[in-house]
Image (cartoon, rainbow, N blue to C red):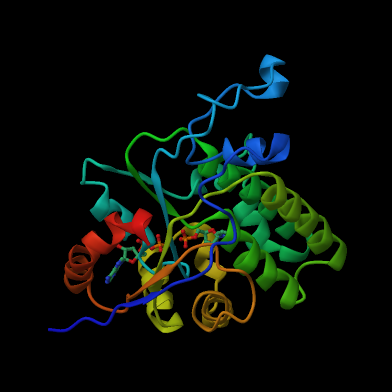
Length: 269
Ligand SMILES: Nc1ncnc2c1ncn2[C@@H]1O[C@H](COP(=O)(O)OP(=O)(O)O)[C@@H](O)[C@H]1O
Ligand SMILES: Nc1ccn([C@H]2C[C@H](O)[C@@H](COP(=O)(O)O)O2)c(=O)n1
């Protein structure tokens, strides 16, 4: 059985290997997949160039796809490999921040609570990107990029986010990506039809998501396709491995196995 997989290369939006470029470059280089060193703010000393150059210490892969496309299931599969660390989306935080549930609030009243959820998503995703690495390969569910390019964009374009909220979130996002190096080596895009996701969403039956109509998943799908396939919307921060993901679980696991080598070789792309 042949399985269709497309590997689309992309010019990186952020340079993965940062040499000394002054304090701004240093701050960028020290984030994410780089070994952390004391910052000027913490130590008050400027790092010596030799011996302090940041060392790349892991391959970072982001698994992208529509809601209920199978990202968590994919990550669960790869989590059994000892050299791979998986980071799922911090959804438990989005459902409970000091006793509040911004995810539920956003679905109840996006115009009022969209900014609240997305501000927190941006923070928690940044935290995920920058957290200390524990294995040579890290697979992470979604990214700070899709949070902005897909979900914030969808709220705004559908008229469910006021322009001022969109502007403030965009300012934050632009500042973060201009000042902090967020290295991504590969994007694995689980490409599904919105109908498949709708079926899986109903089957998963997450309380907050019961209100999600098929049209919402269609909008998210279009934004993903614009970003990662047609490349007409936003910069793509890494090469994209497209895995068709409408298939049953058994066939999906087979595809994951077939793509294991490509995924693990992400640093060579
Ligand atoms: N290939 C598949 N075929 C059928 N159901 C699937 C498949 N992959 C995942 N599921 C189920 O669909 C639901 C959503 O999957 P999940 O991995 O949680 O998606 P995501 O993390 O992208 O939201 C879950 O109930 C999961 O068990
Ligand atoms: N920036 C984001 C990211 C996610 N969500 C919502 C969408 C889903 O209801 C839930 C988690 O998604 P899944 O992992 O199941 O695809 O969080 C959002 O609103 N904004």
